[in-house]
Amino acid sequence: MKWKGLGIISLVLFGLAACSEIDTMKNTEESTDIQESKEPIILKEDNKNEFMIVANERKHTFTKNSSIEAWTFNGSVPGSQIRLKQGEEVKIHLKNELPDPITIHWHGITVNNNMDGIPGVTQNAVQPGDTYTYRFTPEDPGTYMYHTHQDGVNQMDKGLAGSLIVEPQEAEQLDRDYTLVLDEWNTNSDEKLGGMMEGMMEGMMGNMDAYDMYTINGKTGESIKPLEVKEGEKVRIRLVNVGFMSHAFHLHGHEYKIVAVDGQKINEPKAIENKLISVAPGERYDIEFTADNSGDWYLERHGNEEGTENMKIQIKYKNATVNEDRSNQQVALPHFDYTSYGEASDSPFALSQVYDVEYTMDLNTEMKNHEMAYTINGKTFPNTENIQVKEGEKVKVTLRNNSMMDDHPMHLHGHFFQIISKNGKLVEGSPIIKDTVNLTPGDEYVIAFEADNPGDWLFHCHDLHHASAGMVNMVKYDNFQPDFELDPNANNKPE
Image (tube, rainbow, N blue to C red; front, side, top):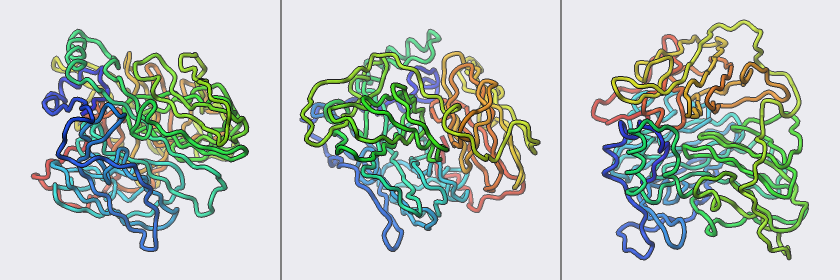
């Protein structure tokens, strides 16, 4: 098993039971009783708009020298990419061939509440051997993801995640359309975990040293297939972070535009270059560029952490003669800031307007009963205070990260929200509509949304180690009643 959020003491509190299950990396020459994983495939809507997703165990190979026993959707890491059509209802059948209960959460898709995939909140977890059918109509085109939400801190670690693309009703004119699923793994669990535990007992926070392998589409280093392009082509790259760690990327040799964040379009994006796009857990960024600089270039992670040098993908021009390593992953570059990008346009919310509900979420890392906890307003889930709303109300939420060393990528289920301000400064340029916002230590964001999707909805940190250690609350609609009967034997674990 890989481990995420490795620098937090919550691993001690919430992960000890799972420690006994740690699967260290295995040489591919070793024998195994389970099947090999396969390359992810793309599932497209047919006339029936119906899919089957089978969750099972597979031996997944990262490189020719390393593999792991992973949990997969349709036999691959990441799982099959699902491509849906805007406005068309779909049925997705989940068959569970794993030994534990699971669910699927459609991250960023505004489904009805009973399709959100949260065990104990919107449904009971799908038991081993059972099949469950999700039905929904995707209304918003863009780049999304899907993943288990049952004991997600461990099950996502094992590989249960994939990308989901909602294609617009009017097809976009693209010559190449690539999706890159970002993740990170610990390949030396026994050795690194011991040192990590000792460090945490000394009060260390934010230690990411145990991460030594970063992957793109389940592969690392030379095993990552290049992105092929031809001179003059319009290329889109969709960056999807299913991990619990931010990854900052730079595209070499080209100007490019960020055309969407969390699936939502940027108004009049401008060409930029030599800036890092930091993709936090749960976030998605769509970038576009014209292949107008023939040669061998890279889209690569920047940083000094172990594993960084192997998290890069070649932009390979067909018939290019240049074959030199243009990588510069150690170069310090400024970060792209979406709060001052693109052109202003009409937006649904403003800081000065009157809101029906105003709520403040102080996010913190605290000691409670001699144990580390991740809190919202000093409390941990399920004892956190809910955001209580009525349908149609306008809601403003102020989020503050009071943790000294921890980022908190906060994800709201069932809704999009608008970023109104960051650290006291109003957003300039394009309206920024998202479902996940990453707060670094000291950050304050003001966001707003309309309560237009009745239900009980999680609002939580997408570093699921933080969520499992308490950083969860809910947006709850007045008088809403879930339409399922809670099964006390389902072993529901919503985080």
